[in-house]
Length: 364
Image (cartoon, rainbow, N blue to C red; front, side, top):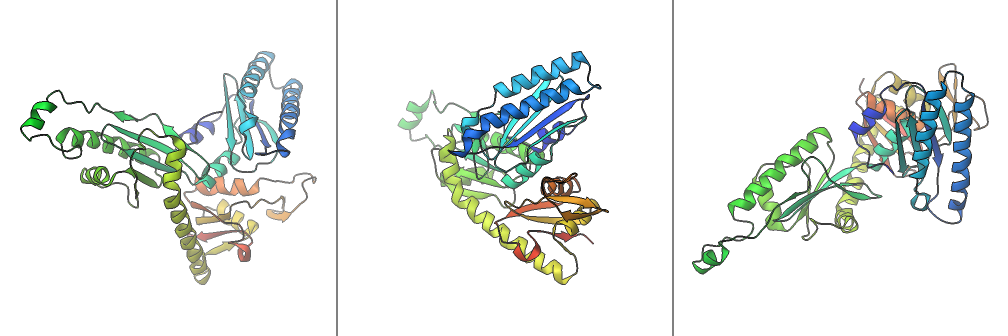
C-alpha cells in the first residue's frame, strides 16, 4: 500500500499521463463475513481491466504490456486482510499506486489520460488529517494522523535526534553547574531546529497540530517561537519514539473535542448564511454553485452518497443500473470545491438532515 496522502501527492497524481492511465476503484470490507467476497471481486475487476486494455485499439502492444505489468505489481502489493472501506489502484506506463481508504467508493474502471482522483481527494478531505509533534530532550518526531490511523512522518528532517551524554557531566555535577535537561543551551538549540523543520512542513501541508510532551518540554518549545495558531498541547511524555497506537490514543480526546467544536461552528455558519441568502442546499443546488466557484464552505455528512444523472444541466435522482448514472457525484463535488479554494468539512450523519445532507456557504 502507498503512504498517507498529502496535497502534494494528490497534485502529482492528477497530472496528465500518456494514454492509458488506468484507475480501478472498488469497495472493500473490514470484517467477516463480508470481506470474504473482496478477493473474488478484485480478481474480477482486474480481469475486466485487462480485457479493456486488450480490446482498446488506441493502446499499442508495447504500452499495453507495460501497463499490464504495472497492474500485476500493484495487485501483488494489496493486503485485503487489512482492508478498510475502499480500494483505489492507479496504473500507467512505468508506475503504479495502491491506496486503502476509510471511505466507501463505487466500483469503477476508467481508462483515460489522467487518473480518477476524486475518490482519493474526498477520502483525504474526510479524514481531516492532522499533525502530532512528539517532543523529548533527545528526539522530536512528527506523526501524520487521522481518526483511523497514525503513521510516523520520516521526511523533511524528521525525526530529529541527538545524544544526551555530556562528557563533562561528572565535573559539572560536582561543582553544581549541571543544568536540568530543559534548561541547557544544547536542548534549546535542538528544539529550535525542530521548530524550524516543523514550520517548513506546516507551510507546505497546513493541518491542525497537536504537540505532545512533558510540560517543561512544551514550554521550552513555545519559547523558541509561536507554533501554528490553534495548535493543541497534549501533556504526556514518553511518546517521541511512539508507538503509533500510543500517539493516536494520546491525541484522540483533543481531536474529538476539536472535531465537535468545528461541527458546531459549521452548522452556525450555515444557519447564518441562510439568513443572508448566501446558502446552497441539496446536491443539485450545491453542484451548480461549486461549478461556478461560488462555494466558500462545503459541509457534507460523513457517509452521504447518492446516485444521480445529469438531466439538462441539473442533477436528478437515478438508479445505479441507469445509463449515464453517476454514483460518486458527492466525491466529485468535494474535489471541485477544493479546486476552487473552498473549505470542506465533514459532519456526523443526520447533522444536515434539513439541508438534504450537503450544503454550502456561498462567497456571493
